[in-house]
Length: 454
Image 1 (cartoon, rainbow, N blue to C red):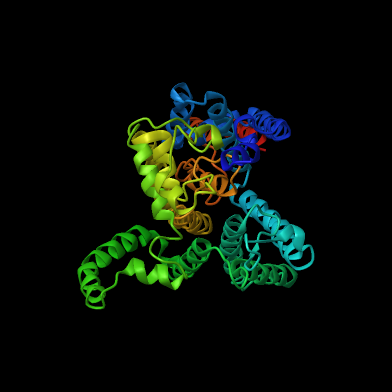
Image 2 (cartoon, one colour):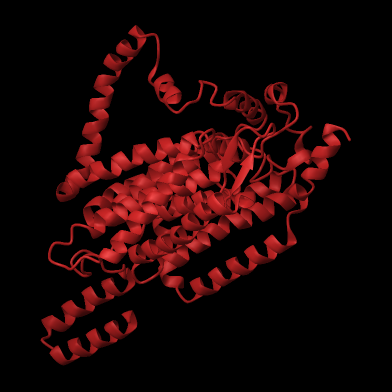
């Protein structure tokens, strides 16, 4: 059997998909839409605050029209939108922060211990070997070592964030069982993140270390969160001023900051030959630089090999072709063109601005959003998760990037769920009732509003 025949047989599912997966995903999305039906007002408020997200998804849907594989594009677009549906289900809860916290706690409480158990005791599931059988790769209950590394990266950041929130309770009795469980889970997470003796996910380790430092650094401005924007601007200015000096120092040692970081992770400057793949992606993207080839229409398996050639990569590894571009931004550029990249950058910019703003309004929520966004953006330099509906990092990216509606000042207590449709009515009617000194009507109206909120 030739290589092309073998590849076609191995990837036959790429064009048709799995019927079981389609039924399961369709059912979950339908349930999510059903739940949002009873929370339509809250969902509309969130979407109204996140116009970049709405426009990005609308554009994704339109890109199906010029896709060479509209069936595949339609399915992958629906899956990507399904992630947004689930994000809205979480964020329309009465307490969004607690809903996010409970979701992530349960997710990692299941994934991390099961992955550790699979690696240690069920090795035919949790461990795979390279072609010559000499290098051991940990996968746990994930698909590969990069997926496991991404889960461990986000799990570690979430657990550190949670420990920082739970520990400083001076006037309240600490829940030592909960703290002990989180510490144990963090130890298991770091063990998984380290990987085997021969193979690990460098992008996940780098993202974790960088964002853990960021998370700890944020604690120093916790009491000065109102000046967070000033600190960010000042940091950018300082880095800009120091950049020429840093360049001169690195140039004197005949190296660059990028080389130092890459070599520290055990990689070379080709990032395990990723630069060859990126060259091919840019060549393909140049054919449709504005609109792209359509959502999910590039990595379609053997049916797209001749349409989207990868000559540089094929010269290096003629017997294997990846299923992603190992750079989320380039994959978006190939699929959605320059317009898609601009829209994605708009979502990222709005999300980062909202997270920084939350450092003042709700420091816990803002710090968690900020570190998750930075970690996922960093990971997408060497891996791909953008637009992938079944990827956990795409869900977490949307969860962190979507901004919640701002409550009306002076009408809703700090930390309370947003209720702007009642707030405006309460303000206008209460002023009228107080001016007329009709306290009985004021009491009746307040009772109606509280019953609606309940």
